[in-house]
Amino acid sequence: MDILVVGSGGREHAIVHKLNQSIRAGKIYASPGNAGIAELAECLPYKATDIDAIVEAAKNLNIDLVFVAPDDPLALGMVDRLNEAGIRAFGPNKKAARLEGSKVFSKGLMKKYNIPTAAYQTFDNSKDAIKYIKTINYPIFIKADGLAVGKGAISADNYDEAVTAINTIMEDKVFGNSGNNIVIEEFMTGTEVTILAFTDGNVVVPMVSSQDHKQVYDNDEGPNTGGMGAFSPSRIYTPELAELCMETIFKPTINAMNKENSTFKGVIYFQLMITPDGPKVIEYNARFGDPEAQVVLPRLKTDLIDIIDAVIDGKLADINIEWHDNAAACVVMASGGYPVKYETGFEINLIENNEDLIIYHAGTKINESGKLVTNGGRVLCVTALAEDLKTALSKSYNAVSQINFKNAHYRKDIGINAIGKK
Picture (cartoon, rainbow, N blue to C red):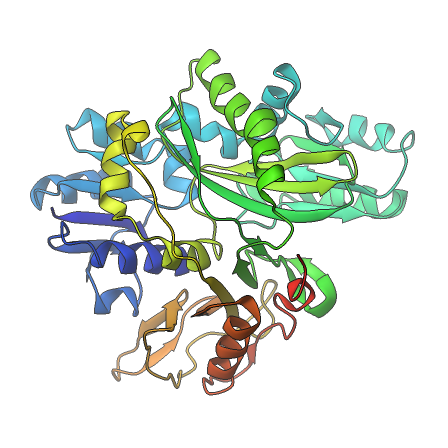
């Protein structure tokens, strides 16, 4: 089976790496890919959002399956276009991808179908939003409605900070048209857990749990990023909690999407807050998370292509998905200044992968001189596997200490607070 993976980051490298392990995989392509992906797949020159070019390439190369990995092409309807062209594609269609593409839609869905989430209000103009924030308690979150590469949520501890956040999103348009509408919601307290799940629109099968770190600096300080690291499994996600989430969040979400004529097939990312009142949804994503994919996929024992087929064909109930009983830790090495302003083009000195260490490339390329250089905000995702989380973290940080490029930045506390928790 020849496969095309759409995207260019660490998540896509993790997907290509896992697909490459399948005995069913033929030639793998990626578009546009990166330097690490290029070691496993033939990279095509088309942007992930260039739907016309991707569809045409899939036709010309007689691709058997296109795996649409990032949020933007899903929201733009790439899966729909591929299916219309008779090409088998993995990922939700445009209507279903609204679950991530519009926070106004997803919050309305949760409210309508009594899926637990934070209390909220939506606004389509800054004047009404600013009037509203005079009447509420703090802290709060202000979120851009549309896609914002993981950076569209701004916390505010007081009125002045909230005004600044509203104007930044709605007037300054730092997230473009994604900020035409906003969601203002209560600040939930608790511990965040990510549950990725496969669904064929009929059943939902959760993957192993994970937790990520969004803030750029240690101790969860600084602005939100796409993710500075992750680990799996979560120590707080007990079997009892998993059962509760299945009955109150996972199944109701799938059923709600069906009732809204938006059947979801693919991977749903449930970002949860485990609050004193029980688990609540922070937000949904319509695809594998990044860097959560980099700690979940290495633990997958079942052939990923078998799972993809079952999802597309509506036969997920017929497959038994198995996982390795181990732990994984990922530390993201980023460009200094990320997520605001940073430079690229610096040479990277890497070490070799081994059985327990996978260095996923996120923002890399080969320059004109044939050197591996930085090419993005997040550069590398250093993932280690071990019998327990403490050992996995030690292996990951040991590898990070041996990798270098100019202005490299990484958090020193990924997973540290989780060690030893039951």
